[in-house]
Length: 265
Image (tube, rainbow, N blue to C red; front, side, top):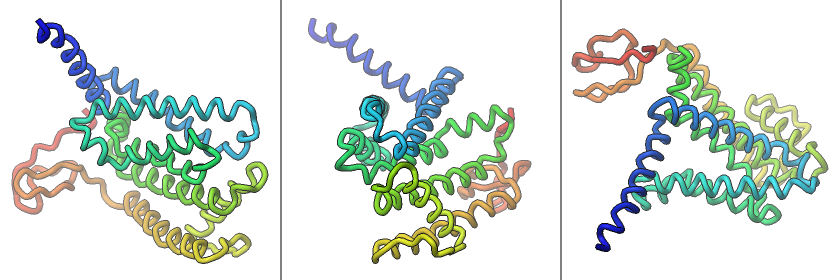
């Protein structure tokens, strides 16, 4: 009798996990719409963090802050349910980043230094099936590598800006500190080096070095994605070569016959 009673609950949990996995993989029009709404919410949350210097003195700041914390907690729980195993979910880097973000939202006066990590959600959107489906439906599937390169560059830009702001300019009034941090980051990434804003101490110098090296690398990657001939991402069944010409019939590496799907279909 007890087995009969527990079966419906187990079936409901399995059904919920299946639906969440369909949503995560963007399978169908419904999941695509929902994921698009979630992406818009993520971007709105990023805007809240960017506007934080202007809003943190407002009485409504903490209300919005805790509301976002509840949203992220629900989002993280849904990903845990959809994951094939708890261990796999725990080992995901985005899981730990979401935990840190939750900490910054629940304890904003103590852990504010890590709030800038929320920009990694934009990176996750760029790696998700949502971007692929959106570009395919818009007829721009061939620009996927370019869009991902742009997203990676922007994520790095705002990641460094957030780190510089919270580490060096957080206590300046209004948005002056954030603007200075953004100005420093852009000047450093482009190697312009005006020298009017510099970061003090050893940590500041190391931050500048990392920003220049990684920033230039990402900028070169973006330029390569823009100018190189378009290739499809399709794994050859024999040799595993990933990149092929869009109209390729045979693999250039091993000669295997390919059956590349038409992304515009």
